[in-house]
Image 1 (tube, protein in one colour):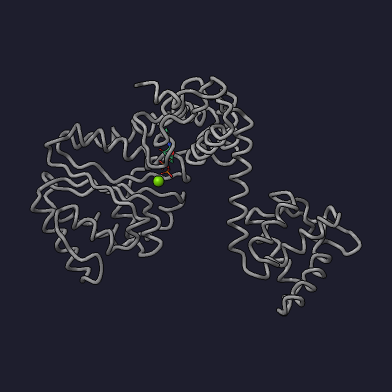
Image 2: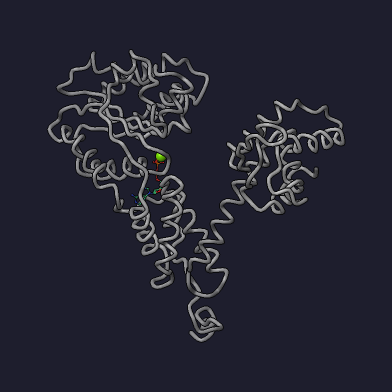
Length: 397
Ligand code: ADP
Ligand code: MG
């Protein structure tokens, strides 16, 4: 009775329109077996861990680099291999993400759990948690290698005291048997410069830097995902090249490149043409840009919305480069209409700068016109008509 199910495979045009074979591969949580473009960092990290093979303590370490440069992926990749290689050795690898555990308490809570101690997730005396952990660690009689991912979030909130007390522990340990090594991973480049001198001298890590990916590196990352997750032959090479070039220009963030690939592949599938092309990438880019601008507009304060509305309406009325003066006049009218008292000209001028730094509009200085030097709006992130639609949706202004 196989014929009953034959419709599942028969496609009207006779072509296969499926593009995505394994959506998991295009998701954020997936870490592939190899990491193109990161050989150097992987090698450095592995070499750094070598002392553990001889039962010696490795020194502390820091990964720095912008978001999406593969820091988390490299850390997980190497830990996975090393914990296999060191299975049975007195070594404990622990990974904690400080975007979830962003206080000393929460990190210490995770450390308790890692050593099998169950404590309440909040409201317990911190000192007891720390004592628990120290005792359990000594009892386990191991070397601990602790990864604190996004550690800058912890330090921003709680200062460096946890980093200090963890790294200080080594001064009281018998280093022939036990040691604590910390790998701090940070998305901010100046993380180490901002640490307290006392903390830095106790932590004092070796550093591995993750530079933004180049277009070629991004292309290889995308090609790997396409091979693992898309139907063979279902993509044009030019589509991957286009994503790689765009994302390299915008800062080399691999997460963004993979997001674009997933979105473009989804659009291509809806299209039912059976092939992922540059056109689909272009559509995906527009959607990504749009959703970013939408989010930015949605969170603007009310007066910012009115200033933006004034600028957009002037553009739509045919003024190609509306200046601060005209924008202010219109903004004032809108403010009155909404029964709020208008802000000063100076403040509105500052708001225009803020709208620019959010990537919603572009401004430039116009020198020596009838009004002297003034700011003018010379471009917008999306076509003005589209901005107006978004403003209407968001604000009903
Ligand atoms: P970071 O921690 O530096 O912000 P991640 O390691 O989380 O960056 O990487 C972001 C995304 O890009 C993840 O989905 C990751 O799997 C992927 N990725 C990053 N670098 C590579 C690489 N060299 N090869 C394959 N995938 C990568
Ligand atoms: Mg990360």
